[in-house]
Length: 275
Image 1 (tube, one colour):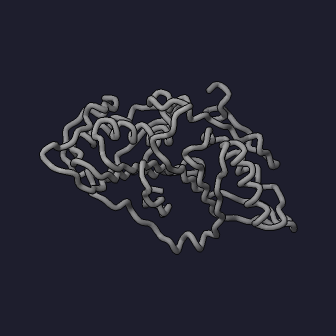
Image 2 (cartoon, one colour):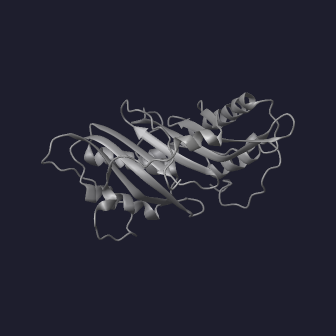
Image 3 (cartoon, one colour):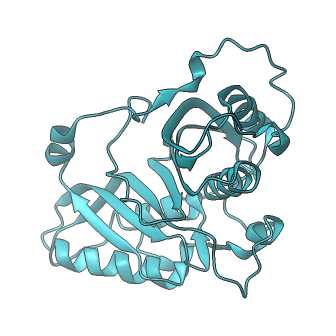
């Protein structure tokens, strides 16, 4: 962690530099969750990154802009540290590309090399994204529950239980109260989370208390979602489970991890009001 660019004073690059990208192995956190490096992952998924500050130069030196979407597979050996990602994207500001296709190929090659798996990229003009508009996560909002809670208590997986009086159901639960902290800088990370499952009904009050417990946790976005997925899987034993979080942006980037244990459709990556 000492060599991470995050949390250190940085000089913004004035030339293209892919060496700025910093990998973070996923294996260490997954080992804490009981997932060994030599065993199959208990989920599939993707980390969807949106970049709002992408710019480069055309052959005549005229600046170009786009909004970029990157998808990093959950089975990639490495995540990409967010500040290093931002610095890398900023290093493109003074780089000339023959056309957008050349830029796209360069982005995919650089990011895939660091992640250790093929990363997909899509460059969109702002007017196209604006037409998509915004929407909130669908599902039952558990934030409506009027609970009394100590918000300083850590997340306790034992709070996760199901109602044994009911048989399996299909349900989608949503909360906008997920907050964790950057493990390096301590800065807050805010998110909305959607939990879809098939199984006995999860007791909503316990789930809400559990999620609020992340407020004091210092962990990366992707690790938080995998922790939530594994805790629900172990304590509630759903037949099917998907967990999706949309985090607010920092440094022109937002990260939206998705994990599922079945053939669920991938999220459509539509922005929320807080993003």
